[in-house]
Length: 523
Image (cartoon, rainbow, N blue to C red; front, side, top):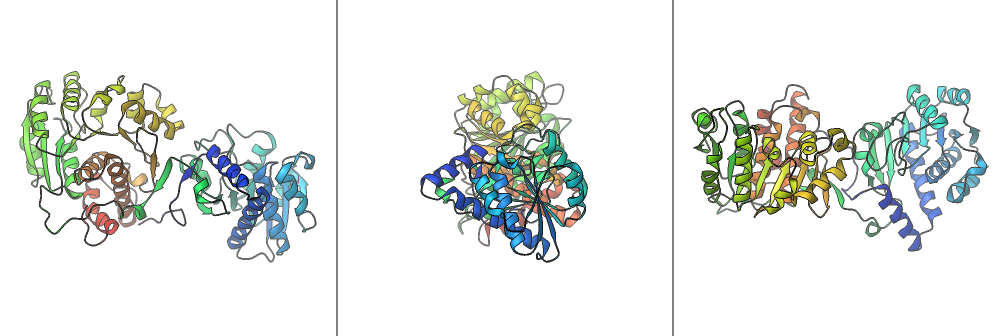
């Protein structure tokens, strides 16, 4: 299984403004800001020594702006020079522009043996040509927009040099909140981020620029770092996956109704139903258009199959709504939407069922399109809803360009949860799960191995099974996404990222769940 790129315990993920508030709160609590900067700089210095394998005979170039990020760089440069490294600071500002803690750190660095040079392209070129490591201390997490002038040129030269780059807190040129990159930006081999993870390091393209991310404690108390965003991975699953009691039977461990499929997409119901079974559902029923009942039923021999009134085009007709609502009353959770198509009559069927079923519903794919243009109507549902869109589906639901969704995924998923009153899972790198009050989980599992048709159908079934086993909708959504992603990672380790199909995930799921839950747990 691919190891997580994050060291240490899972913790809050902060926006730049939240990190700034934590810094202020630390100062107000009596922790001097200069102490925090010294700790940060020394931590960077130690990381650099580890990367270099020592300091003797090694040269380091430190690119510095004029803010606190530069202050961390000055401390790191002094630390390295005092330990024998040949250290050169390239300043992107005049020394007189350095103020506050950064100015103090610059003054303390003097006399340590660090060579300081004002940025000049030929000077930087010479230093890069003989450096073993570049430390990026130009800009911090508060940056927005595009690099320009000397900083853009320096970033481009550092990237082109082939020298390994260690970024402090975040690569310069990456938006610390959204991960956006507009123009040139540092491409680091490693980023040492201070105190807590930052959102811009986890979202693309910022994550690609950050490389391997290490989180280092610099002495800010945990209680001062408040956030509504959390990173969840495999280590978080054992505490939420319910144990299966010795007296368990098929009806006690979860009953799921799958409402999915059409004549042109019959595989969707197979993948969703089997995903639910493989995730631990004890009883699964499939409600499908009558025209595919005989072909779908034999493909999932463990599930019961009910044929429903269909249209001439082989999809659910509006007349199927009543029977589906009645059938749902016998189950605990409904998984609905994969492969149902977008015919007007079928969309009306979906809406009727959603408002008539008093059970939690996991709504995916085509089913989400039924609420395009009126997402607020989902608030009228008599039971919880979990939506699992990709960016395109969320864009249609909210009525905006997909580019806008992708440029700020966190705000987009939170808006969708607020407007619909539902738990919303936004697929992609990294999957985000938000509830209406804004609390959000980012899932640290998955990857390009999941870029295959039908993988989302499997996820729908997994989430439905977890909800039927007793999990609240929010936990079922992020835990299901985590299990789904871990199954993909397991397969990528065995088979590579290309060629894995959705059906392969079904076979990997029980092993992933067993490993995540521990012996004696089932779901």
